[in-house]
Length: 436
Image (cartoon, rainbow, N blue to C red):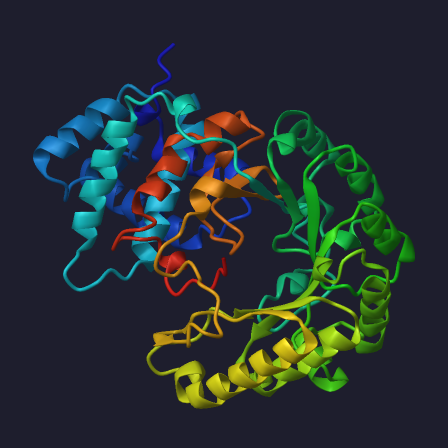
């Protein structure tokens, strides 16, 4: 039986991909474009489009010699290839183009020609010879949260157990992948500690060698959780954007500052090393004046560090960050001096939008050069492998349908690595605040 995916009905292929493999992603824009394409194709040709109709049109603006070779390659692919690999190639490419903003001297056609040329080159490569296991693996145990923070909003949609990583998947990763890492971080678009069986997840992880780390809002009132994490010598990265109750609770909607502070003090009092407890402070317009105060809070609670992240929604040229740059820089210097007096490790970004921060007080970030795609991976609750700690939405593939090694060393991962340190870097990577 012929199972060439190019001969499949385009609408049916899209519906299968969106309902099963990509169901957690917003494909409304893609569906709208496909619906218009199907309608126009029906009027002109008299039938619904097959995948070869759609893809030949998608490739129409490529140079002929590249287009012909790409089509020759795609006509050899079966449906299994498409669902394991190809659908992510097309999804990633569409997102990159729809959200991209290349420098004026570069065009989308330039990007697409390099993309498909690299696709052809990688088609002849033995991927298992490429990249070593990542030293850092980030696990999103859940895509649920008990808070509805103003800069995230994951918690606004309520709790859905379908958005939790299965213990079967975690066991599989523990047996085959996780022990290759040096550090495992519980992190993602969700709060791990709200899982009803979180201690069961910890029991699985407790048998592993890598250092355990958790990013947490520290609001759950369950001492057993904190005791278990402390017994496992866990590093705590604690989200906190204000030292005062009113502002804290207005940012982290649904949180109790008094409960948070109680947990914070408990963690600080029981760490084996102060640097195993650090605050992650997300800089926004509403909390500029809080930077130094959060350093005070860290010192008061016995924590060893503060990491300043920056919300990604501002315009570098005209937004609040640009308008308040002098105030922010002043607060950075005050926080830096205060941290030195407390012997607290303060990590400040080396830029704010287009404005550089004095290197004497700042930490280097990845906004100009990034090595993370070779050193870490973020595994979503459903098994999707994505690029990094900063929650980049680019998808390498899914380790429930393929082996981790095949996805980590696969064509989607290699395509991302190809562009990450070029003028065509992924739109989400621009103005990156990942601190090294």
